[in-house]
Amino acid sequence: MSRQLLLDVLPAPAPTFSNYVPGPNGAALDAARALAPGAALYLWGPPGCGRSHLLRAVAAGAGGRYVGAADPAGVLRGLAEAPPDSAPAARVAVDDVHRMDGAQQAALFALYNRWRESAATARAFALAVAGDLAPRAMPLREDLRTRLGWGLVFRLDPLSDADKLAALRTQAAERGLQLAPEVLNWILTRYERDMRRLASLLDALDRYSLAERRPITIPLLRAMLADPDTPKP
Image (cartoon, rainbow, N blue to C red):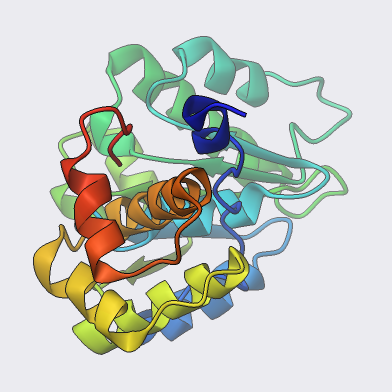
């Protein structure tokens, strides 16, 4: 098998509640895990704090729907205008609202109205939304900005270095990787600290180790980052 094929073998593990390392965000994790039909949740915080991870976990499984800012407004509009005798989905997660244009904001506004009207009925659904700022500070249309605060609101704080080490150990274990403490420390101190980038680095390192048929060590990690033929995380 070629190196390129080997580099494409292992997909990243899907974001779940169990592989989310909460650090200081335990209350937000509990709220997301317990989100029930008729309830709403808004998560906010800086890039890399775990917003998208939790939203994808909310939407995972049967009856869940994840919508990002890259999706056209018609996707949200379709959920808002689902047949009146049914819920648009059991759990709807809408990510990166701070990146949404006017049409997307209007569709999300309609979805919030649909959520509120159905909250006490058999057609109720859970709604989880995330952005980079608190509701009142969001640069959105006023009627949508007020709706972001209709349910529970949690600020997500970045993980500490100790929490990031724990997250790296967890994610490495999920990939079947046994990483020595010095490798983990090297990654954390010399590489970008955004957890999404760190998770991508683990994926690339896993694939590169398979392709080279070498154990994961600091020299191997340095070689991978210096190899122009290796897709970088």
